[in-house]
Image 1 (cartoon, rainbow, N blue to C red):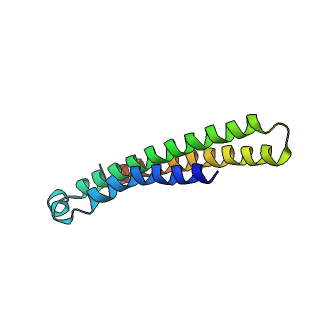
Image 2 (spheres, rainbow, N blue to C red):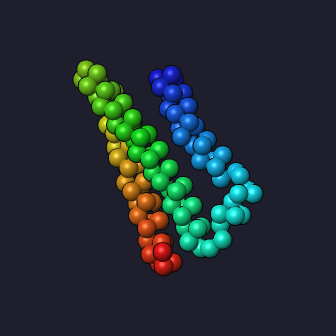
Image 3 (cartoon, rainbow, N blue to C red):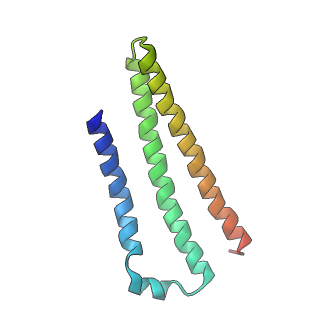
Length: 112
């Protein structure tokens, strides 16, 4: 179980580090950001990265919960744990979709 957690953390770092290094280039950022539309484009890019990472992570948790559910062998504690993982992953998907929609709403309000 600890190996799986460490693997998930490393996977999330692999997804997040490139986005962080792109945003850390301050000199180029001043040239890129000159209008509100540019700022919205950057926000959309970051939101797309986060959305993709959250969907991948949620998919892994759904598979993990499904595997635990199948392997529970009737043990109520394991079944409850598996259902909890699947439920939390689905909540994560709903939050990710809502955040993606929020970016679209902000873009439409700001006239993009």
